Amino acid sequence: MPPNNARSPRRAIFLSYDGRSLKGVGMQINPPFGYQKIVPFYRNTRVRLPEAGELPAFVRATNGVPVSYTEFAVACRDYPLAFVTTDAGKTFSPVAIIGIAGNENLFVRDGLWDPSVYLPAYIRRYPFCMARVTLDGQEQADRLVCVEEAFLSDVGESMFDPGGNPLPRWSGTGKLLEEYERDLERTREMCGILADFGLLEPFTL
Image (tube, rainbow, N blue to C red):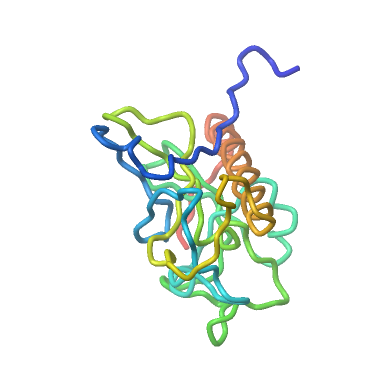
């Protein structure tokens, strides 16, 4: 049984088919790093799934990719890991270092990720994500399943049947999204503990 002060797990939520739940509500969706314009993923949405080996455009010109704590053991075999901050040390996030110079990815060749090294879950989940949502100025506890707008397609793949039940092609993706989001939450807590105890030393790459 979890301790009394344990946080409730984040839920993945979907919007209704027609989007009427958004009308009259001031909703702001905060896209994760690297995503361009994300939109809510409805159960009747058709999506162009990435082809084998296809990578998000942003990973070709970045020198770091976010990783969760559960990826440390396998990711550290191929990449140096570092903790980065964008708010002057208030919070930290772990990343796999994939380049030395800015906008440099040493693991992409001819548009493909080096098949001999680990591919972080952050990239494998693309074009989907679970986004933070603010409603009328208040951040919600649950995460909204979203998709990169550029991947919407009338001739794309359906992830759910007409009754709203998940098709086999969604099973793996949905599991990855939920497990990864839980891992990220625990990773944020871990980083907070490391920072509180002064265990993170600053350096310049």
